[in-house]
Image (cartoon, rainbow, N blue to C red; front, side, top):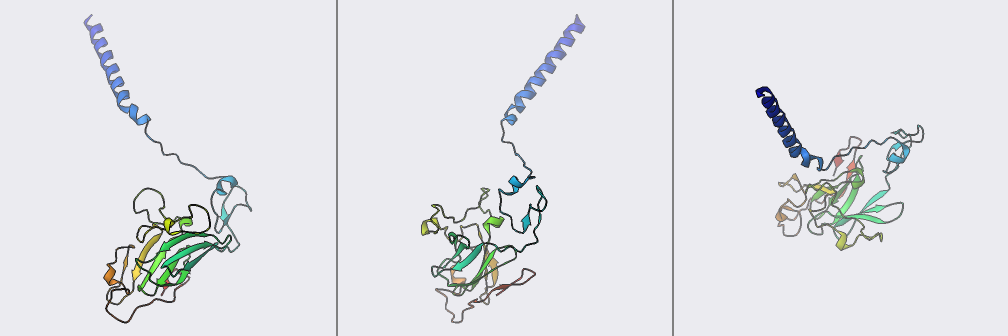
Length: 223
């Protein structure tokens, strides 16, 4: 009898432990699951935009394209102090970006090997990098997992002031390089004290005025 009672106690204890364990892990079953996906067929690849890649030579397989492909974007400085990204196929403005905290006479633009835009601001004495969002070139500063940038929300082919992000808040405006003598440095947009710019409020006469930009084969920028 003692042996039976002992076995019964052990059985109850085991049951209690199992029940407690399942009760503890039950909430885990309701947690969000991270689902991975493997892109393997042509239909999968067609969901994105292919640059320098193709899947026609060998179906259901990505390979480097032997054709030279030009990105369908042109970057246009505006008197407003912004730079517009225009789709050269449709003519639609698909992005617009403040490149200084004041109208800084953005002048010349160039594109690096990854499709990002660089612009020289004559009045501010800065060079600013704008990332190509289609290539994932943005800085998720607020950590929300998406690219917060100006887009043509109403699809009318024009970016309005209401669709613009303030300077320093557009996550495609990656950083600015200040070229003013004695104040040189690389900053996140909005981090340069206003008095350090080659712009309104500065007392000196000679401006840095970057007017020409070029990117070489090693992806170095020359201003």
